[in-house]
Image (cartoon, rainbow, N blue to C red; front, side, top):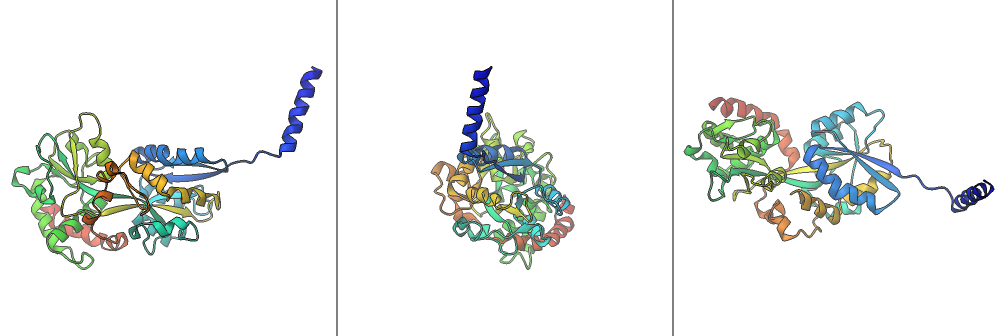
Length: 346
């Protein structure tokens, strides 16, 4: 017994001499669920947590951008999140409500290395991944992958095309792409040419509200063509015996920008910026691109060829330069035009 007491005293004395063990600061990130949450935790957050001892990041899968914004609004007087993942247009809404601190070069020097589309005036958040709109096709019904959006207008595809109508971002993006195909030059002023062409597509549309998502009708062979997001489409295309193919059509596409946002009066204080800086690094963005096909926003990220060909990083010349905040500003107008002249034609 005396030996045990003596040993305990020696251990206690050693700990006293070494000083107290520093507690980790927890940084809480709220973001999308399902595939995004699984892959982002594996590729970025787990690696960050393993790399240092001062800060530990915890990721909470909340859901869509709208759901995340709802949580932030409810917590405004006593925030529980430090960082929030949001679509750029929702980041702008949160900025207007005073929910976020501005992210610029004074917060992270890596901001200077980002694609200009990741740094939109009026939004406090900063883009950290780029997704883009793609055409989905059935491998069983197309021996050769289609290369043009115009394939959707083939008369043989009556009730064989799935399109998500606005206010879904996919529908808004398709409106801009088709308007440009038809000779439109300024979607902020008018999308009349694109909407007239989309009205002609209506007889081919199986549904304007794909459920549970745009990918299921292709995977189940109910539809021949559809419109979806590249990252999720590439994931489904990679599954064993998948029927789904993915194409970035020659006429181009539009980026969807996911942002990280610093919550005002966040509980972790400046510790959150340590993870933010890592998330904007080439290392973190390439690791995430390897897990799921999001293109990096950091222009110093050297993307391997096998990743580039699966993302818009491999065909930057096809991406149509669209300010996401300009698109948000004309959203209501486009929604009304769809209801009046496109969906009514079905």
